[in-house]
Image (tube, rainbow over the protein chains, first blue to last red):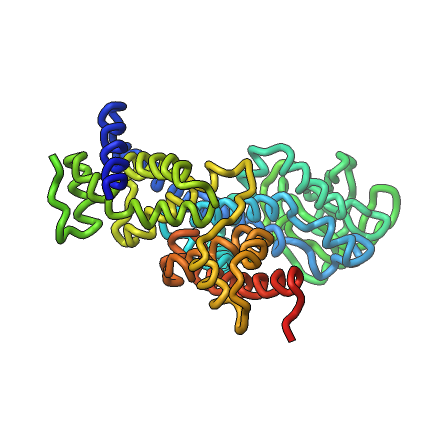
Length: 243
Length: 184
């Protein structure tokens, strides 16, 4: 018993002698706050990333994907937004780690944390995409991150196969009622006949469009389908974008 | 001056220790024997070495008093700090378990349906076991902690604690059979 008391006293003397004091509460609050901040910051970024991911997937031409890329797998490989997928996965991991670091984060099984995180990211991201958030973010990233923009251009290059009936570019003039002049992705000028269009579309100079049809001659194309450069969450319309 | 610790809860003692360092002696005295025993159980070190670790634990507990969350039992919190400190203190060497005969007997009785009470043959079984399984058996059957307390101490979900205890019992039986042959 004496030994026990001695040790306790020795420890207390040691604390006093070395002037050891409790670390201020603010330090622990700051640490906890940091993890919660990382959690919410990561969640918001992941949701925005997910909205953009959904937008990129939905804005692809799935109906002609197989013909465009000469096979489904090739099409999927070309259009899949790998960058966004990796971005979302990294953030989801960050969110998971942040939750685990909070004071009661260890109480939950990994699956009970991972599933809600994935569900929240995808569902809220889907809703934001529906209200046009994904498209806005996509446009913003394309304007600010050249590498991301290049990936988009690479996807769009599938539409530069005039000999196979796919052509895309910017309308530079409307000559007559049924003829437009188009500048393609390689800056080549095309005369496009649109009298055989299956559906009529409002077009104007400066618009970017994609066309399905037939190459009649060198730099002469006949379009049967015109579709917008990008599909929006709310429907079809044209976007003025950088090429 | 020794403070009066009687009838005071752990949470009250923590609050008082933050105001008056002398009250921390109450906490030290209350947990000294259980924690020294626990340190020796999981590390196998002599009493004097366990005292060194215990001192280190007390300093950590005192400096982190503001980090104590009252929704958690104080005992779980102090056991968590003790476990982590002991593990990091002896990280470089594999602990050689030398439990007291009574402890070995208690452990074996929980892990096996039938066993021969020969303590000298149980210790090698424990030494062969994975550290995490051995630790969890010690917490459950020697420290007599509940699943919730163990969950708070090792910072794992309760479901994981239950799974590990189950696996630990099986591993104990497996190594016993490997070392001494299956009893018919």
